[in-house]
Structure formats: structure tokens, C-alpha cells
Image (tube, rainbow, N blue to C red; front, side):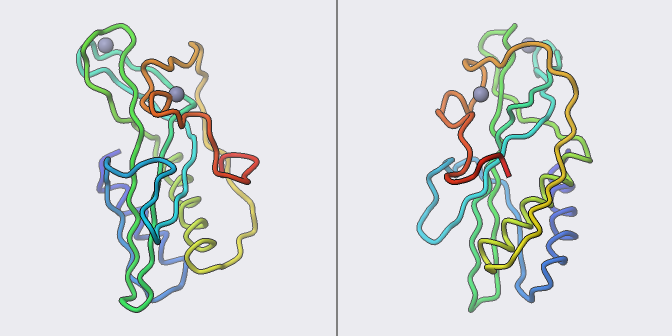
Length: 169
Ligand SMILES: [Zn+2]
Ligand SMILES: [Zn+2]
């Protein structure tokens, strides 16, 4: 999914909040999982995506793809910002290859951003949510997770959920 897809889907879904604030989403690989700046809130989740090695072109699926969002609303300026970081994986068959970004299906990207909007409703507007969450769609993953090829594992955040949350919502 190109970044424009994220922006388009996010802008469409953020309307559902029915708030007058302008929200924008931006990619920022410098945000730290579990390390928000003061005034920012985090939503992180584990989801399913595919990766492709830029060297050997091999593709692999993973059900442990961490996506981290940091969000902040400036009430007086009527402006909100979401920063997003997708944690990467690299190919286990190649050496000295770059970490690759995940590719999400259109369905899973929709679900991911829907969940993000619910989190904004809860955390930035103290709203309620019906707690219903659509599950991510998964393809079968036949090989075990490779901690040495997973950026989230290397950062020690791979299986962690948000404090007090029983699952990944
Ligand atoms: Zn490779
Ligand atoms: Zn991992």
C-alpha cells in the first residue's frame, strides 16, 4: 500500500469522529514504541502483512507485524496529528539486506485505520466505543517467527500489548 492510500483512508475515516479538528497522518520512523513524547498517546497493535525481499524478491507472510501510532490533539489550534511507524522485517535467506516495510492488504489497512480512529475517539475525545473490533484477515503462516529478522523483536516490543489491554486492540 502506498502512503497515499493510508492518507486517503485515514481522512475518510476521521470524518466519522464528527469533530471540527483537522487531523493529519504522517509516517515517522523516529517514533519509539512505548516511548511517547509528553502529551502524546500511543496505540500499537500486531497485525498481519506480507514482506518482500528487495534482493531475492522472496515474499513471506507474518502475523506479528507491529504498527505503532503516536497521536496528539491540540485543542485550541483545532489540529491533530498521528505519526505512524511500521516495524520492519528482513529476509532470512539473504545477508546484509535492508529491513523491509510490510505491505498490507486493502482490507487489513481499512481495519487497522478503523481501530486507530476508535483509539483517537477514546484517547483524544474521551468518547465511547462499542468495543466491537473486526479481526484482521490472515493468510496461513507456515514458518516460525524469526526474532533476529524482526525489528520489533530487536527492539523488545514484538509481543507486548498496551498495558491493561487483554488483546491487541
Ligand atoms: Zn532475500
Ligand atoms: Zn518479532
